[in-house]
Length: 267
Image 1: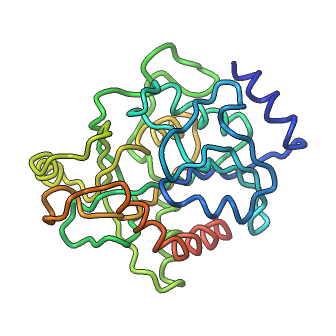
Image 2: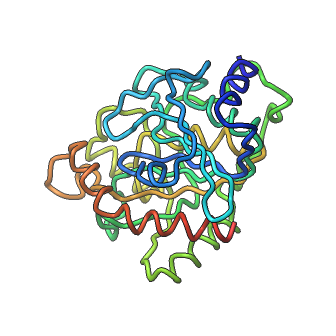
């Protein structure tokens, strides 16, 4: 399957060899629109699942940004859509095969930490996997990684420092914290968020963790950035909706884009 995927992509990219991969979460796809050189819909690529979530265009975008060759996932596939863990992380393995060395993972997340506010950007320093499974379950591909990969530093500390430095230059009040992932698609209950806070989580979402595990397994450097799009359940009395998530991510897309662009210069 991997050979079919790579052969298909190479038909459109003229041997374009990206060094950085970016996964753009809910409402954060504008960066891909602005810099797109080649775009391939997921449903055309062998091995790729089709994204069905509002705010996710569902295409692989190739671009040159600040003299860096980049491949972007304009929207991701989620476990809650009915895809397998292997399906939703397959694009990360494809990035590895294309030559990507560094992966930037983004998402929209709910504030578990009571000091966080919608519109904040949080640099992920670690994560908690509450999805009940692991994308590395199954036969291991020794060409990609070892059977029992170390996960003590999934989110590269040097990249975290670079992101924080970029935030200071841009006068952004970047947060740092732990991201907790559950399967969704229902939002967490107030009791579950209270448990997450007790466990040390700062933000909650339904993605990113499987991709981070696989990228680290493949030997790629990883940095994660969450757009705090809403208060998690029980933090405020407001009902949670996907519309609110999209509205908030749209309101901060400029500062998010500026952060990514400056980070690309310094990686």
